[in-house]
Image 1: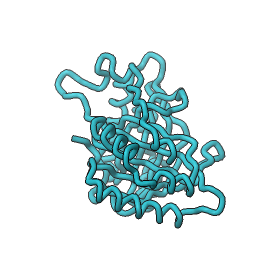
Image 2 (image 1 turned 90 degrees about the vertical axis):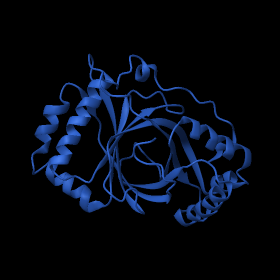
Image 3 (image 1 turned 180 degrees about the horizontal axis):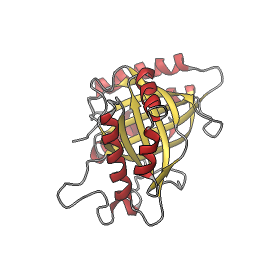
Image 4 (image 1 turned 90 degrees about the horizontal axis):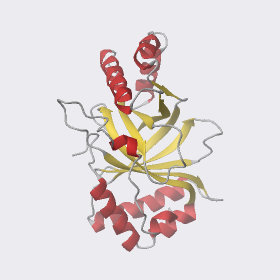
Length: 261
């Protein structure tokens, strides 16, 4: 993870996210955002998951010893993806807020003890980017667990609509997920520094505890006719591209909750 050797310049999110307080309604406070830290990587020649796990074990010891800010992390491998996402592994981390992000990045830049070089020997990362995450629907009890699934799709707000309209649609869809007993947690990730000029407005991210929960939602959407409800809720407001499914393993549970405080 070579980029973390250097102190990064953090850019604010796209101005549209903040202008007019797009998420806030008159009777509710604005949402709390968590700071997302993500890498898209490929293993170097002769390296694989066992090599990464060995470095992660050392990194966890360093994290424990440094007694730094809370940080949770997952290693994800592709399950259902296409050639437009040619990666072997993704790293997804989260801090509770921007202040913690700054402290965590500074500590790693100043005193990572050579672990950055060890990560670099195992994999090469084509992207290191940040995002602001807001929770739309809390995940199932027991989250994050030792492993699970994550679904990602890029979503674009329709012309004449706002991010607030899109979030209202996602909240309505979450009510539908409640009605079918879904175990999915749902987040929106808004692009920050390191993104390659995205044409989409946010990533819609689902988490599932296992394939059984994922399959149950698939069944409800298709044979259960929830697709018709989705068209009614999202039609003309927001459109999302094809979902990508990843198997995730929790490599550090720093206690950062789905709704940051």
